[in-house]
Amino acid sequence: MDERNKDLPLIVSEILIEMQQMRHERQQDREENRQFMQLIVEESRKNTERLLEVFNRGFDMVQTRIDQVDERLERVERKQDDKK
Image (cartoon, rainbow, N blue to C red):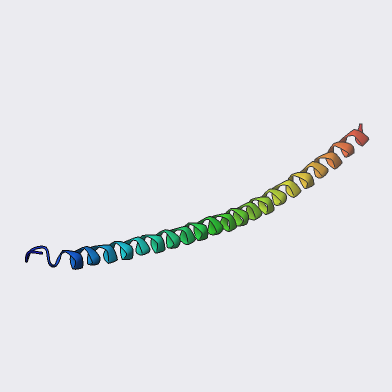
């Protein structure tokens, strides 16, 4: 081997090692991203459930109030009918 090529095996070895490290880092990054996305999806699901619960409670409150007003209106109409 001439002088320029004598370091070639070492250089190739270093490049291969660096490539393996980079591949490993990418795999770790992908796993971290997957876990992070899983967390985001789970938190989004929980928030959606909470919003739905709040909406349902509000809807129930409004429906209860509508029912009360309907009952009151019916009583008033009955009283008016009774007077006639």
